[in-house]
Length: 81
View 1: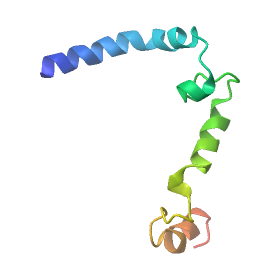
View 2 (view 1 turned 180 degrees about the vertical axis):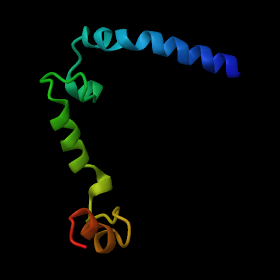
View 3 (view 1 turned 90 degrees about the vertical axis):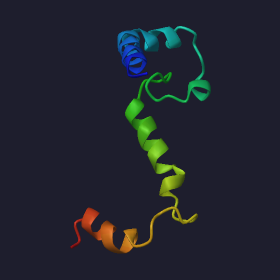
């Protein structure tokens, strides 16, 4: 099994440089692929920032922020020690 995993990783490493071009050649819409790397307007950083800001993990209303984060970690992150 270890040899199969090693061969699979080697195969993926050799295919990776060609896969983005292959996928982009089909002209899928941005809503189909859900990838910031191959989006139609090319600004991957804005897309990643938008995804991070709208992530359910950053939603205070639904309680996904751990207890104590705002009290203890946010002052450190904001430089207010």
